[in-house]
Amino acid sequence: MSQDLFQAPDYYQLDELLTEENILVRNAAREWVKRAVSPIIEEAAQNAKFPKSIISGLAEIGAFGPYIPEEYGGAGLDQISYGLIMQEIERGDSGVRSTASVQSSLVMYPIWKYGNEAQRQKYLPKLASGELLGCFGLTEPDHGSNPGGMTTNIKDMGDYYFLNGAKMWISNAPFADVAVVWAKNEEGRIKGVLVERGMAGFSTPETHNKWSLRASATGELIFDNVKIPKENILPNKDGLGAPLGCLDSARYGIAWGAIGAAMDCYDTALRYAKQRIQFDKPIAGMQLQQKKLAEMITEITKAQLLTWRLGVLKNENRATTAQISMAKRNNVDMAIHIAREARQILGAMGITGEYSIMRHMMNLESVITYEGTHDIHLLITGMDITGISAFK
Image (spheres, rainbow, N blue to C red):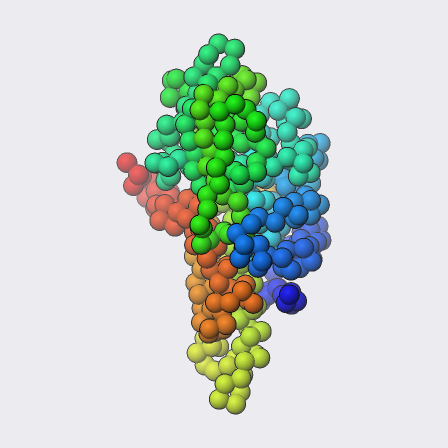
């Protein structure tokens, strides 16, 4: 078991832009990842098993609903603290960050924002503590980038609804206790539905044989005449804007998280380059390796500035969907390129589980696709700057 020697790069002294609380929260998450995630994550990824032993630790560092008010069990933190927690967790592993992102932004967020007080009191404290785990059902086998075309539906049966349909590529599905599911009613309006494990007709088969996010549990949500009590409908927002509002929060967290993966790859490559001797000197002294490392730290620094400013706008409730899309797209693309260049610096050693780089690289191939693909985010920016939609 290799020791976690990670040292976070801060080339522009960006810690000076953070509050004392931001730094305390970030450092607590960083130390937890070193202690609880790094020693076990390679084995978990190799075995394609989500390490459930870390759930209580995620709750303790405030990773479940960091910005949810304390009255509902959340930590009541600002958006920059939320981002920094996601950064540190993804430095450990994208799959672990996915679990925290889903719990926070795709399950707790809609219950908090779109639910009623009874729903908030019933679910949020247990989700914040990790007693309950959740998942988010939007993507379908035939509807990914076009979620508005979903066929999952609810039918009013008088005292309850029948839910029918299927969702696919759902993080946390195999073990989730509650699913926030989006379905069309008989008028074609999209509604949020709270589906609990154990409801007759509800099943969550696991997706196997993944080369990416191997330490994360992925599955399907199958609904066969699932009887949904009317009190399980989220009452305060419907339409496609409701699930897209959740995705804004999740994408914001991903923009920060991708920086963590990039930082880990850069730090690993820098340390290796200083130690690896070829032609009688460390390869860190070779021009081509210095070019790679210099470009890495430049791109990480640019991404840090982008997300910090986005966090300020989020704290002021001024961040737009298009701004969040830009950060998600840029930062994940940046992280993938850094992972690939870092692997080159390590040569053949870069493909082994002795180092984290190949695992990050494979994980990021999923991160660049989920929560809006690389290309779709480009079209969101394009629509924002031209005023013309390319989707229709």
